[in-house]
Amino acid sequence: MTGVTSVTGVAVDETMRRVLDEEGREVAPPPSVPDDDLLALHRHMLRMRLLDQRMLSLQRQGRIGFYGMATGQEASVTGSAYPLRKGDWVFHALRETGVCLWRGTSIQELVCQLIGNAGDVLQGRQMPMHFSDRKVNSVAWSSVIGTQLPHAMGAAYAAKLLKHDTVCVGYIGDGGTSIGDFHAALNFAAVWKVPAVFFCQNNQWAISVPLAAQTVSSSIAVKAVAYGMPGVRVDGNDLLAVIAAQREAVDRARAGDGPTLIESVTFRMGGHSSSDDPTRYRDAALVETWEKRDPVRRFGAWLRHRALLTDALIEQWTTEINDEISAAVTAAEALPPPGIETLFSDVYAEMPPHLVEQMKYAQALGLGTRFDGAFPL
Ligand SMILES: Cc1ncc(C[n+]2csc(CCOP(=O)(O)OP(=O)(O)O)c2C)c(N)n1
Image 1 (cartoon, rainbow, N blue to C red):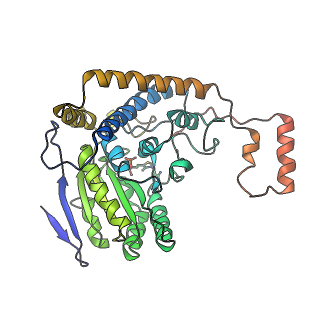
Image 2 (image 1 turned 60 degrees about the vertical axis):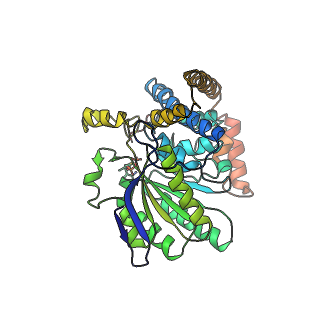
Image 3 (image 1 turned 90 degrees about the vertical axis):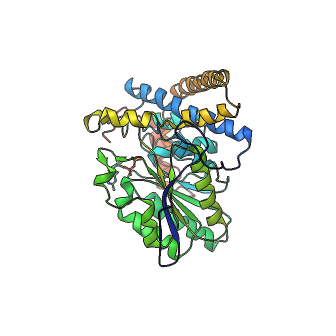
C-alpha cells in the first residue's frame, strides 16, 4: 500500500482498490451483497448503457436538444448509489443521472425533462439533462462545475446540526477538482466533521483537457491529506470495489466520523456531451485500451463465474429495457409543453395579486412555452 498520513493522523491510500481483475476474477473478498441485488445492479448498468445509446440517437434526430452520456462509467455511478439509504441526499451533476434512476426516477420522467414538457418534474426550467428529482432527494444543480460540493457540505452541516441520520454525497469530475469550490467544501467539511462523502469520478477528461493537464498531484485521492480526511482510490470500473469503498465512506459519515474523498478511476468512453467530438483530441488507441476494461462486461463475467447470469437473462433484460425506453419516448413525445401557469408558480407560497392577474392574462391569450434550439455546451 502506498500511503500518506495527514497531520491529523488520517491515512490516505493511493493504491487503487480492486475486487475484480479485468477478466472479472476475484482478487480481493467481495462486499456482502444479496444475489437479487447483484442481478439488479447488473441490470441497472445495462439500463444506463442502453438508455445512453437511445438518447444519443434521439439527439442526433433532433428530437431532444442535448444529452450527456455516462457510457463506461456505469459501475462508478451505480456502485456509488447502492450503499445509500432512501433518506440520504445526492448532489450530482451531468454524469450521475443513473443515481436518480437507481433511486426511483423513471425513464419517462428523464425523457420528459430532456424535452422540457408538461411531464418534466422540473417544469421545463432547466437545461436538458440538468436533471434532478425531489422525490429521490436529488438536489438541483447548475452547469457551473464544482458547485455541488459546497452544497453537499452545507446540507451535511445542516443534517449534523439537526441531528438527522442522513448522509450527503457530493459528486464531482476530475476537472471540477481544480475549482475553488472543491477546496472550500472539503476544508469546511473536515473542520466541521460533517456527514458527507465527496465522490470524484475521475474519467480522465474534462471535455478536451486530459487529467495530466489538470493536476500534477500523484492522484486526486491524495488531495484529501491536506484536509485531514481519508482519501480512497478505487477502480471505478469495478462495481464491487466501488460499492465497498462507498459503503465504508457512507458508514463512516453516518457514524459521525466525518467526510471522505473517494477517487473513482474510470473513463469517459463517449464525448463530453452530444455536442462534443472526442476524436478531435484523443487517440483511438487509448479508447480501445479502456474498452477492454468495460465495467458491465467485467461484473457480468464475475456473475457468470458464480452461475448467476446467463445469455438468456441478458437477452430478456435487453428486450424489457428497450421496450421501457420506447414506451417512455412515445409517452413523453405525446405531452404538451408545460402550462403557461408554471411560469408563475413556485415562487411565492401565496401568489401576489399582480402575478395572478398576469397569469390569467397569459392564460386567456393561450400563450405556451416551447424551446426547439440546440445547446452549444
Ligand atoms: C466553472 C466552470 N468552468 C467551466 C465550465 C465549462 N465546462 C463544462 S463541463 C466541463 C468539464 C467538466 O469536466 P469534469 O469536472 O472532469 O467532469 P466530467 O464532465 O468529465 O464528468 C467544463 C470545463 C463550467 N461549466 N463551469
